[in-house]
Image (tube, rainbow, N blue to C red; front, side, top):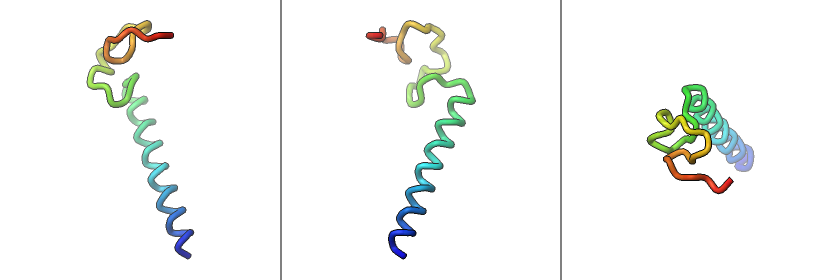
Length: 54
């Protein structure tokens, strides 16, 4: 019974994290957690204005 409760709690946590990521991407953020993600329009730069290595 304890394992079932732990599994349910983990599923809820993972589901809420997935929903948060979905909602943030839907609102237009490119990088979640970056304060400048909505204002960054450059595709060759990183989220916060840093050049990416790719």
